[in-house]
Length: 577
Image 1 (cartoon, rainbow, N blue to C red):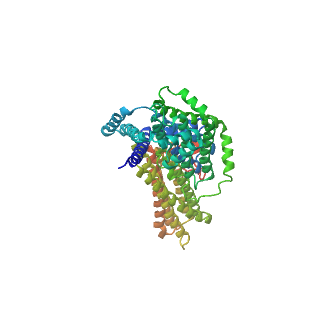
Image 2: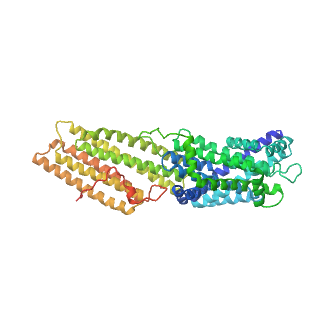
């Protein structure tokens, strides 16, 4: 096998190990962070400074500014974040992504194998999930560096190649060439962290004199700037087919990096001099990796400090470039929040699942209100009822599919798995409530269209049961939203009162039959309707039991009790006894 083929194989093999280590480390970091990730994400909707800080922290955990940006685009598209909030987070993400370059600059060649061994032993011997995740972080960190070392070893011959020496010379003289080269590299690899790591390794190779870098800092900076431009392509691709706000979010990421790269390209020599000044001194080949990392960090920090107070200007620019308002309206049965692009970030995925279940519950509640109207003979409620039932069914199917995909990814911690399973149970309970309501309504319609019908008093008793069911659903969802175990416990107590009320209504029906107010042949129909309502309340109680198990919706901001109950049906509940 000739030297060129060995070099190519070494580069792609080392790159594969680097990317595998980085992705594994990202997954393990998310699992190790656990509930802390929820707190970090909670800063996303705060002021621009906190948003930028959150963006940096999230990216440091995800090890990818592209992953953070795609997640934010999903939030904006679903209406969970405003455009200014999203822009501030993206600014912070650009700072967070420099963490990898800083780590790469450390010279830990002699410690790679001990790190891999220690990480493996902690992962292999550890019994607790958190310990195993920490072990995987360490193991992945070692594999990441081993990938870098492999790429560095195969690139050494390139440092003495006249072709590469000539190319690096042109890059130093023509910065635009380096910017294009860096952008293309990142576009191909889809990871600026990987291309910057390659850049650091190649720049650390000695030139013909054996002392200076083969490319030097002025040759590396343009490629670095190109890497920053190339990483925006992922966000632009993710915005295709999304809302205009999502497109504007992705465009702001590109503008941030492109404008910064142009300015710094014109200031190449003074910028390189500044980086040399703030970086450790020594032989160029020994310090250039740190210089590149510092240049990467300085570039993104300076651009963020400049753009952060100019977010309104950025909003105006992207709004001008992407004109108009969002005209694409989703059907009610289409998921508004679920986004497959963020499914690899478990906390974010659980957040959008919570939002979608909340939406589904609102439709189910409206469905119960509509069903109560059917009882009172209002035809306006009948058509809306059928549409609401179809909406709940299709939304529940989408939620179930999304949760199944999330479990299949294997990114959830044990605690997150329990929470997500609880969310799935709640979604299924809402679906069962909708089904039972549909069954009851069909029975009522059949009675209303027949020669024999229940008395007005009987229908009023059934309406009282529907009021109770609506209140139970409201309270159950409030208990889950607020993690209110006291309310959940009170609900379960009310469940017993509901059964007593149903017995009372059944007894009252038999009294009406005796007095000739109701037809005796309808006794079974009345009992079946009561039984259907009873099963609805059972499903509401099941949701309350999940609240007692501390299944709770993931939110990005604190809510108050006034924010919890939906406006669709604040129905006063009559005494049950």
